[in-house]
Image (cartoon, rainbow over the protein chains, first blue to last red):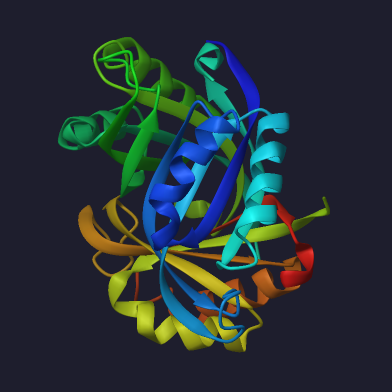
Length: 100
Length: 100
Length: 100
């Protein structure tokens, strides 16, 4: 079975951004993404600068490094000032790499 | 504290498959698995071949490499033609390795 | 863009523990954490020792290695005997490392 390494970009942000970010991710080169509901706790809130417990979403995008970087740069430049946002990359080995 | 490396196999697929796949995963050697609800967006749908937004689940199995490979092969052979399905592996360092 | 490696500690445990563990994680050095609902299946239940399907949560903490280790040790010592609990570490490359 063919396996290839890709990047997984995870974006944890405010639930209110879901419909806004979807088209943005595709424009920046994602072939798809997966969203799960989450609850955030801690000092990650950019908006209030303090401790918070909030309705968040986790968005995960499997892509190559340049696409991950383009998405991350775009989100940080355009949304991170006004919305709580955590972004990180990890390595994944995907099956059926021709799909990504 | 003892830590050992294992594989985490992630399967993102259609929610309708949850009850079918559970017994399959255990038969293929998984000692357990965790399911979360998710929403998929993009061109991953095998069924319609186009853009879709659908009710998905994310299944995660912590196991060794041979079990991960057996599960992935079984799922790809038996379900990937008729259901949207993304599979990928990542490395995790688990605590209490005797449990897996 | 600045990227730095951190650890992601994942704790999969019983939903009933959520409100108890929150303050514990912060006391042990976490700057925040993300919770998602999950369903666990398998032989992971410490309480009944057998197969179970149960209402779980997945807690994820982005932190450095010493904090991850402190949290894991604390949870294993204080909760793992009475609650089903899976803990594992993975590597993530975070954007905006000054936040963690």
